[in-house]
Length: 283
Ligand code: C2E
Ligand code: MG
Ligand code: MG
Ligand code: MG
Image (cartoon, rainbow, N blue to C red; front, side, top):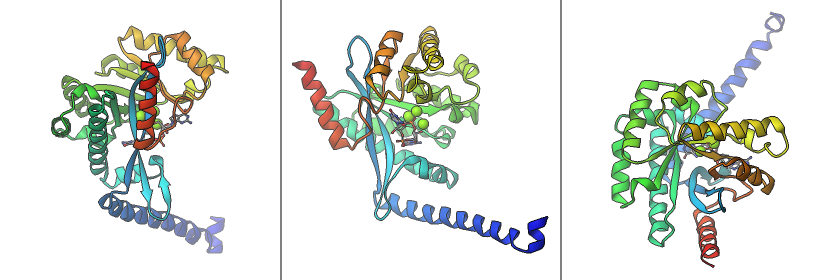
């Protein structure tokens, strides 16, 4: 009321919104152009087994936008906008193809690891999605066991019926499914009851503190037990140091991922790392 009388409050607010909308439109235009210019690239982060000794299990593909002027842009900055503008289908298709092609190269040199791809809400709304994946795996002559798919709790909660049927089809093909960022969403227990998933990826909010905070430790330990009682594997995200890793060994966690093992890196860097791990194991 008060600002309205001065004649300034309204316009300032409107200009702010206008700027945001403009920034969003600019980002969208640049993203569309960037998609056509192959500016989206993948970094990879390893997942290693926790017991009895750390061994490479696979990698997760994480998308980045290599912008010609703005540099490397992280997914949290552009995926939301992409999703709201219906660009996510194109991005997922691209990420899948790049990741599967890279996995083929690794398999060809004897590095038979799995590659995990993150999905978004729109992917699970598309009934043709499982066929699209089957076609890609066939084209690159890769077994379905080489692909893992990660979905967050929020993805699972919208459009539950459709999502369940797409997930069921993917799993029937032999693809492992993981719930990502577990513990940070809402109806965790009710969907654990019915979802066709293989892995729980416990969010780093709990894992990164489990060596220093007893509550976090209790949550990690009991989630390991919960996952195992449900016949699921548990993956700890956010393993930032060896103390956390030691805790995970103690709790019987299956797989671990985090900066303390390796930060997400380009395919070239990760390939060198994978080779060094394999030769270390052979030695
Ligand atoms: P996410 O799938 O849960 O991936 C893990 C995120 O945590 C990654 O951030 C990774 O770099 C970061 N991280 C890994 N280890 C550590 C650690 O030890 N400490 C800390 N502080 N962080 C760690 P990133 O790459 O920025 O990705 C953020 C999110 O964007 C991902 O979370 C995923 O939800 C989404 N995303 C990434 N790539 C794709 C994609 O290709 N498609 C879709 N739909 N979503 C993607
Ligand atoms: Mg993920
Ligand atoms: Mg996660
Ligand atoms: Mg996340």
